[in-house]
Image (cartoon, rainbow, N blue to C red; front, side, top):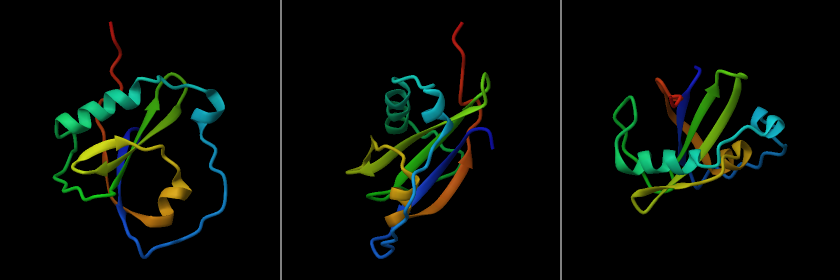
Length: 116
């Protein structure tokens, strides 16, 4: 999928240790708008933006992944659900998988809208 979201559910019994260093295109190309996480966070906390009904639990984590057409670069944004609200949480695949599992995923339509 070009643009997608993934919900990770907390599992305190998982306790996996994963060794490695993920390198993303974002890291290599340094393409990122610093306001994007704040804009997404506001939308997450103000409206239902998902393509299917979801119930969130404490410590759920959400990955929003967007692919930019200009250079085919994928940018990942991470969030964690705490006290009934989403908070920005840096996406680190290995760190997340230590205590979470992939629970649900979905497609994002028209994720990137250009200004005029």
